[in-house]
Amino acid sequence: MMRFCSLGSGSSGNATLIEHRGTTRTTRLLVDCGFSLRELTRRLRERGVLPDEIDALFVTHEHSDHVGCALALRRRHGVALWTSEGTWHALRGSEDAPAPARFARHGEPIEVGGLQVNPFAVPHDAAQPLQLVCGDGAHRLGVLTDLGDTPAEVAAALQACDALLLETNHDTQMLAQGPYPAYLKRRVGGDRGHLANGQSARLLAAIAHAGLRHVVAAHLSRQNNRPELAAAALAGALGAAADTIVVADAVTGSPWLDLG
Image (cartoon, rainbow, N blue to C red; front, side, top):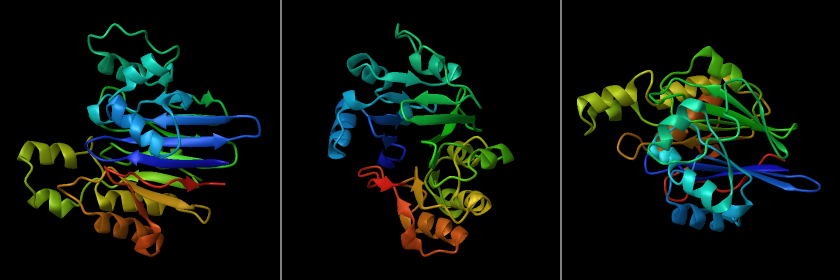
């Protein structure tokens, strides 16, 4: 059985927990950990998981709302760390921490217990960002946040997913009329920034299929988006009702969602 949940998603912190229960063991993968170790531990406990029950951590890129307590989690609980070489050099800073045993690379699968992680490169203003598709041989979950454009390679990587956690960062009109200074509006709305609702909807329409069970709207801006706008955009791409879309928020994340 495979399931996943968001522990929180937004500019204040991001983390996604993926779990596979096999016949002999349970594998848990954490994607990003953009919180303090204390706060991450609290959120994990709310989902019935302890930090030392995490098998591996995949950090998508070095921005603080995704890195958070990555090094502390590895140091205190012995969690295996996966990230790109570029991200590692950017997140490490001055801390004298041992590098991962092997770096994550675009197109090279990673085996974590009963899960296979397939990283792929995305356009974002970070050193070497990677997003991923995670599967157990029967089901596939795509995790896609923090990118400003959706090239064909991204759509190809997300084909045949049973579930998607998909960035819907901003509404274009709200961003244009909102309080951000001009340089920040250009960054957020640029092709290495974040996805607007309409961009995410077009990507979803291109990769949707009959077997897609769950769509989670993620990484919403508090200033430049509203949950109902994000849900409506994604639901429209599927020709479905807005309440079929789960919206992950910064405080509560999302409930567990089963893939079977």
